[in-house]
Length: 510
Ligand code: XMP
Image (cartoon, rainbow, N blue to C red; front, side):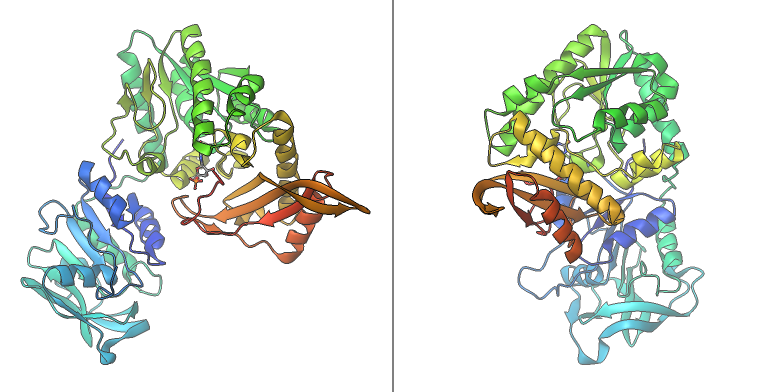
């Protein structure tokens, strides 16, 4: 599958995601990373272009974010486009002057006169309406740069080779009337090819996997399925070409939510899976995980048991491969970013296997997998499904050991809250719901008696990619309904709601 062609460095502008979405509408995929992560990515990847986003910062503020250290600003390796703060930062770092003149602050609609001879403004009207939001302005260009648009001051700049570009206004915002055309011109200048077409991607992935499998003596593949969007979509991509060679394995870990195995059976059927093996292993998982309350140690224990079960399945089915739905975000988050070849004997994200493991989705983001699922005509239950961690409810018993009883309590509470949210039609506003049992017991009153019982924490987040997330504020009447419903349980006396954003918190509690 094609490598990602555009890196967007995110300096915190509220419009950064809109840049990514607009590029995708123009047929080109991109990766969005904060400056420090962009460095890690640039170490192993050479994009065709880098876009530096806007920001609330001024380049003169102490602690303002800088260019990624590995960014090549010669224009030789790739094109660069600085937008707003991105342009100011480029100018400042390349020897220009950035000031805050009272006369040239713009907030909202502005009129710009562009140099229509410059390829960035090809087919753009000479006088065009844009959307701008800046206090700082580039007042003197770096050596070798020319102004290619004005709106009282310098509104856009370019080096002589048209490789390093800056725009003071926001082409990604819809109020910039010809903004999409400007971004299209930029894509053309950077020779980006269209790489966002779900049907083509599906064929590319199928071919890539088939090519690897054909070379192997052992042609069976094991795919772990959870019923979630990634593994179900991967199964749906591969099932038509691998047929019975694809063995889907689902583990009933004991940490699943109510009805999940039934949903999984329906989802894998709609994905066209021929071989589905369901392994029941609740006792093994709980026995191993209950020895610790440390989140990471629990994950390690989970992985040990999980790996053992898969190894047994590999041997039983004489498989030559494990296929996993690892996404670009998983690779980036794990810090092991690179031109990760699809095939790795000892892969660097999760487990090491005796057989080769394949990561056909390694360059995709969650929203892209959802689009593949739509293109494959999988039901909405798959493409609209919220993520759920592999270790499941084991991560949602926090600060107290996992036990069958605790897990059952969380499972019941999760179902109660989910049903309330469905009733109020709120699930569409939420990217993920977390209901966790906290290891904090406290005093309560039930009837006329004092009781000493458990606390539950409810957390819902809104996010596009789970790299960052906003805590969701439930409407007050829903808070009341959830609290009333949960405290009906004889052992629950308190319900906490957690709206902490990520960062500093994470989505899960551990
Ligand atoms: P955090 O908590 O890191 O989670 O913000 C981001 C997303 O990843 C999921 N998550 C996991 N998924 N194994 C998984 O398969 C894990 O150990 C794990 N931990 C977190 C989390 O549910 C959220 O969607």
